Length: 253
Ligand code: 5GP
Image 1 (spheres, rainbow, N blue to C red):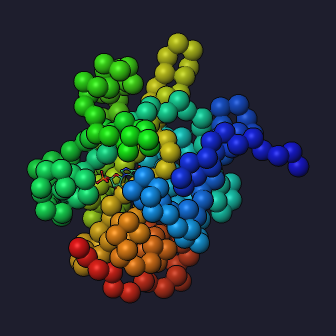
Image 2: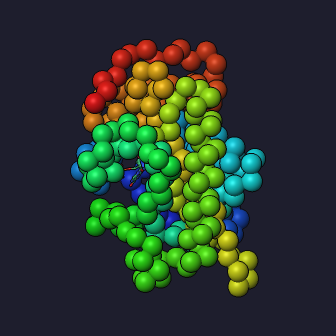
């Protein structure tokens, strides 16, 4: 079999050239990184869980008409996706204060925000993905005003969908990050949700106990990351029904 051409290797995924023009194979690694890769570990099985969870969320978004890159899952660790021109922004939506927003503004983690707040960070690891304003985005030409309108609309639709899906299984969607990309049709382009949606890129807290079920478990040494992701997958019915619930307590801070 011919060796596949690797296009890009990131912290959690590898992208290979897909079988058809305009497609890419997205491979989910077991690597976990935090604090701009200062903290690293291999969590066996994380890639399998994130492949399934991202498939679940992207498929659901597609069913309600939110365009995204997902085409089909290929195997345990790989999915076929549309090739896009990534907009160099991390689009963050927050429903509750946490993480960098809590630090920056001195708001206690878990405080409900008056409305969903959308933030943009410039995607550049060497700079630590700094927060930027729409002024920076327009002035440096990272996205047009029409792109920004579309990105805001996509982000809020993803938030409504994900919040509802998670709420139905007793999980609070605190915040999340998405990436968007351009697909071209002649002189025109449209924006679609790309990259991944998984507990690596969301904050998910159990509604009853506040238990963290996302990458903060790794970032903050709160327990077993794989158990947390398995619990999310089990509640969503993404993993086999007989997967036992994870009852180990996780510290909340
Ligand atoms: P914060 O700005 O509080 O660190 O992150 C806000 C949300 O965006 C969290 O759900 C976090 O997981 C996600 N997020 C922010 N930056 C990144 C990133 O570089 N990679 C991933 N996977 N998620 C991120």
